[in-house]
Length: 357
Image (cartoon, rainbow, N blue to C red; front, top):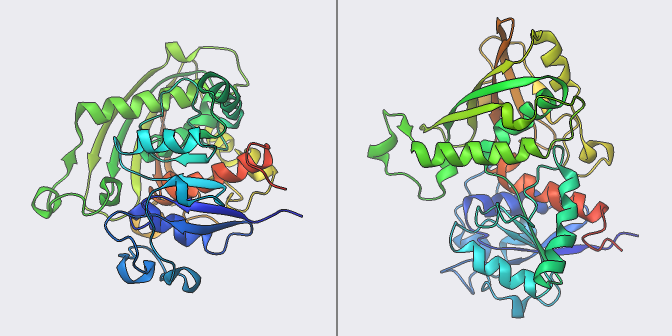
């Protein structure tokens, strides 16, 4: 019989932290047992958290005391979920991994360490094998596994079945990203209200770099062209929506490619989480809408079951014989962060990297 795994959530009062709490409250075998937060230690979670998501603070969790981010106090914790901010996360996560904890990180600090998986469970689950190399090289009992940037996931999940099945030549990506992607309190109102805020060349490059790594790890059904021959570029923006990243992709191909075939590939795309029927896996990672005015951020960001775990794709169009356009919508703090982290943990349980006895 599977035992209950106890989870620590670092930054449990942040926007991603509250999604971890919400999604784990009724999880069949992962229990939020240790809520860590800065500036609120010793206080009941329900009294100090700004619950900025659906529902309300779960009754069984509201009275839990917020505790320090201290591995010495976590003797009975099995999994550490870390949505800590860039810069702060790196050394903390390393400390936990050295001491034998299994760390699932949403931070960018270790995403490009060559022995650290950057995982989307449906897309590159085989990269879990990097954990073995990581432990050997670093002499760790635990490990760190990261999830990609939410923007990169919103592009990579629908691009994966395209790259698997067709001879892709290039992708031009434009994003319109929600405020919650910047954390709380986020962006000053005078910078974002009545505005579309370019995120700049650095963020553009980061998005391209992460999508490139993810697609390079996709197991393809055709042999060429290699990813090195595919041109990827992104232009990224922040807009005044709360949750949900909306992305427009123009995909070019080496040969004539039918938009209907592209649609079929995305509709039929599933991965190991679906085959294993993991608790947080949506039946379909990609949901296609044929409505001309969808997806819309407000109406579609909670798509899927569990809510928010599917990427919605629409506005598929044959631009010319070798170009297809689509738009995608991802719930950035759910599928793009906490939900993706939980699904990754579930997959690592099944693969034996996290004890499931």
